[in-house]
Image 1 (cartoon, chains in turn purple, brown):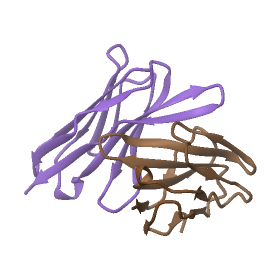
Image 2 (cartoon, helix red, strand yellow):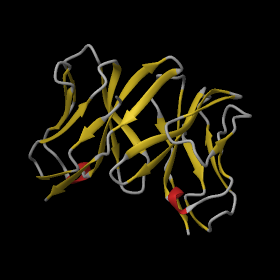
Image 3 (tube, one colour):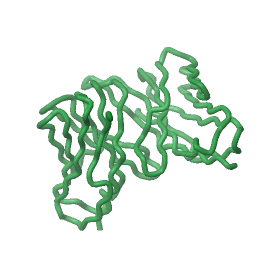
Image 4 (cartoon, chains in turn cyan, orange):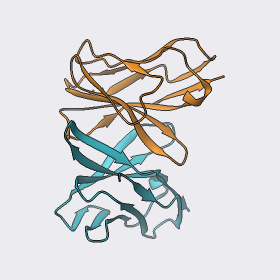
Length: 113
Length: 112
């Protein structure tokens, strides 16, 4: 089936690292994405990883992919108050009729100063 | 500035009164899509369009219609809105199917 699950809430202190986890069920995903949604705004693509990669680093962001366990994580180093937002994990599935993006329910990240 | 715009941003309406939410992109993207976002459910796709005059149902199309007469516009039509369509709606576009999607700012719809 097509299911993406995330923990609902994470609270960290400013300067600490944040780790947001995601699990998915469909092993045919081509890309996996992390989107950020700030209050009152649309979704902004943060980073993505191709399904045959294990890790991708982009400045403060590190994405880890464990294909065997169907587990994806996003690590934010030196978390700042501006990182407070909802983070969505999504997988892109190739279907007969085209690509389909399946989203998780989102993780609310709260950063305490 | 490259962007996806939606109008209106907020709308309160009554059951059964037809409404249209407009979506426009200025990036010459072929692919456009509508999602609804509900608490605890993430984003679910309503309809998508691969190109002009090519549209298809997503996961939750019931109660919605779309059209794609021009490349830049992809309006979402609710012929007879019901309270269960109260939600936050997002339009998105991408260069082609499978490419990065750019999202609009969202339209918060309340149907009473």
